[in-house]
Amino acid sequence: MNKLVEIALGLVTGIGGFLEAGSLATSAQAGASFGFQLVWAIALGTICIAFLIEMAGRLAAVSKHTLPDAMRERFGIRFFTVPLVVVVLVSFLVLASEIGGVSLALQLATGIRFQWWAPAVALAVWLLLWAHNFSLVEKGASLLGLVTLVFLVGAHKLHAPLGEIGSNLIPSLPREDSAKYWFTAVSIIGASVSPYLFYFYSAGAIEDHWDEGYLGVNRVIAGLGMGFGGTVAVAVLVCAALVFHTSGVQIDRYEQIPLILAQPLGRWGFILFVASLGIACFGAALEIALQIAYLVAQGFGWKWGENIRPSQAARFSLVYTGAILLAGLLILTGIDPLKLTVFSMALTALSLPVTVVPLLIVMNDPEYLGDNVNHWIANTAVLVVSVIACVVALVAIPLQFLGGS
Amino acid sequence: MELGQALLDQQVTDRKGELMGKVDGVIVELRKAKPPRVAGLLIGGGTAAERVHAGWARWLLRWRRGWGPRHDEPLEVPWGKVLKIGVDVKVDLDAERTPALDWEHWIRDRIISRIPGA
Image (cartoon, rainbow over all chains, first blue to last red; front, side, top):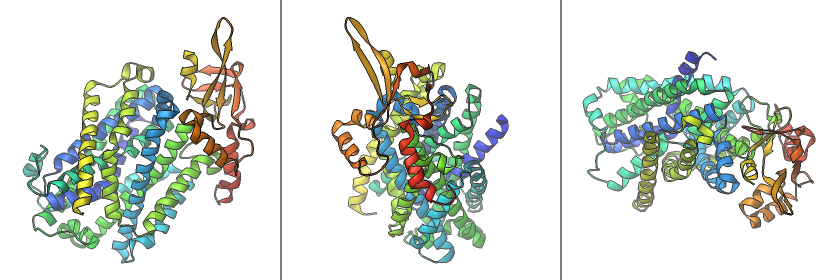
């Protein structure tokens, strides 16, 4: 495919696909509780994921291996089982969160409780994957995902003070409620640096037959795509801050959350909020379900592919079918989707070293990357963020649960 | 022996390029007064599980015997059948005719094909 078209598609996916249940929930919570203070967490998470996405793409283009394939090869089945199990479990919880997000959007639109929507949402996600034409679905989902740009419009309408927002790019210590501050910061990092993003990206690069000629394209998509996407997350935080934090109103009911757009944009704000939530989470659900199947199939050498008939890749199809079924059941139990989402994000942050360190080791192995091994800056940035996020999560998660959320 | 290590856990493809699993194990031939050499590859049949944890592997195989394809032995690929070692290990076999895809076929026939649209 023409490289410019690839860049354009990659950017659209990066912008439209950045927001999902995790980034929406954590950015909104951060804005409502701490104003603009946690902008630095979004920025840090975005920089980290940009590096990781670039790495996943480079690995695929140069070594012609997907990430799970390379990881099993490099570490052997014994050590591979650790990231395999951890990423599958964490991704499963995030998948359930996304299905919960779509269900919540439907509750906001219709008044019918979210849990009763879960089976229909799960079925819809599954059907689109079963139709084995994901390339088409992906393009559609990415384009529709651009609706999330409405948060930028909302922030503008609320007269977002750019200077003040910008000054919060520098990390600051909490003035009050430390436990919640750090828990929220860590959840934001977990939402930005979700493993499913770079695992999915590496599979896509292989399916598109990327080679070393695509390294530039890869860098642009990773940097600009994630960069713009992160800006949308900041816009969500800003809207929540200006609508809730400044007025001191606390969010206790789901029905309040759309206010972050309904206040600046009226009825259309509400509609577009619901649409953004639904579309963003639905798109993410599709990707995560596929990603779980990729991880297992590529790790065990099974046939896999997003456009293959289910009967041609039976084990692969069974994995995503099972994942979606279980995730749907979890939401059907009525578990609070917002709490599940934020918890999954914190768990993602906690597990970052396990998911990221193997990738870093492979990325520094000349056997896979030849001359294209990692630059020390990339290694350091990602490693530092992952380890710090993990350590902070270790402390913040129990504290948050002891203090109640 | 270095070859054996390098081969382990690599993707295996058949002569048509179809994916047929990973090199779960390596058969090593010990020879008198000569260095050991790789005699073949092992694919599937609980070989990988055994490398993770022998106890769990036994439990897994016992559990699997209750259902699934009755044959659960690993596929042995003699060294002579290895065509090329590169990004993948290409072997001179037809994946469909080997036990490597037994589970794939069983799941396809018993579960996946029962769902409309497969």
